[in-house]
Length: 553
Image 1: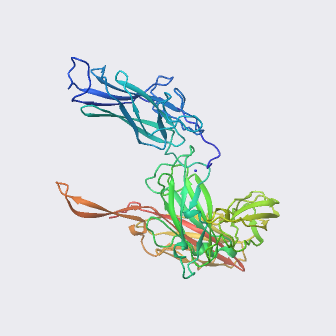
Image 2: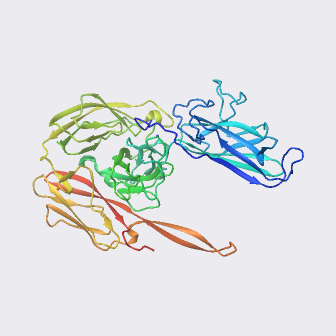
Image 3: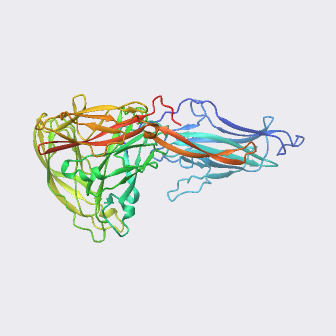
């Protein structure tokens, strides 16, 4: 969700014989002299493969191989009706997919299946099978999506008889792939209108709902977590392009207060959240992180899988019919050697978003350019490099589509010694690039964390414009910034979900409602700005508040 550089194969393991049997009493078919009311059974089973094990597990059919009897992606199913282990002559059997219609299809493979234009049999969701000595055979064939297919067969006689079997296709519900996380936006839109634009129909365009797809190594949705399994952060950009990111907010799950960081769960592999603009224009870079180790970001991130998405804040709705000229000015940035570097490039005009590529030259060793205009990495060699870039807008994918605009620009990266430039140390001795994780907090306890400054002129000024309301800071010692709690943290500082349930009496009559609140860890983010002389750096500090031993009602 082409999301991965590789996919692992699937192995059919040994499983127990699975047969769905429904026993019933009542009328039914039978031979002369038999009791027509004798109990009889309807059985649905899977034929065994070459290893003697019933084929109730099939691998993913990634190459869309057509069905074939005995093939690796096809299992043969047998439906029969018996009384006292003797076949019962019946009318037709009717079989259908009652679950997992996306993971495969039913076939007869007897020459009577409807065919496509290439002459291959077409899958069915339901089929009718003529009985032969009380039984019939048909086939289930796997597709490229993982899941469980529930197949149900019925026989209509004096009473209805049903039987079911489950066929598992592929492996699914694993942890995030080590590749990357893909993102999409409402209407394939790559921009938001700034909040200070008044009038017209721009109101709904001041926010943008996005989805991030988190799939496992098989290209299947990760399991739905008990808590949250995706962390989204608005990353600070360079000081010259920082305001759009500083103004923007994230929202999800009913949270209406401004957040620079939030954690959300996936549903069928997709996590949904909204970005809300501020008053400033420019690029807003979003970092999306999942945890490959346990598919949970509430308990810390041990093995991160990440991607960067970029949204642009603009002051007018881009027109694909009469677009403004695409502009991207040349830029120069300084990157200390051996220190993590991040920069989202900017453009304006045309139809956002923008696609970037290198036309000539090469970035310093250790740095890469993504197609959405993010330069990142850790430079490994001193020196200055200039690259020529091609920037293209999204006019071709807009409605109505129009000709894509493109423009050339240049970017210079100066890699300097490690002790040059200003830096914020979040913990230990490591200088933060654009984001860092700091000490976590617990409900009922006090909180404290120290930041320190490095480099610059030796004289520092700190600013924290958007601290959570339970934190304050002390910068009396200008070299050290102390952040501490101004009150005890409470259960209301966690993620709080409110649900209403019906209360019923012994007769099942609703006599009232009950409101329940559930609590889960909440991640907070705030910007830390450090100025020394004429240089300013900004980093996003992230912390998680957990319930600990507190009792929340």
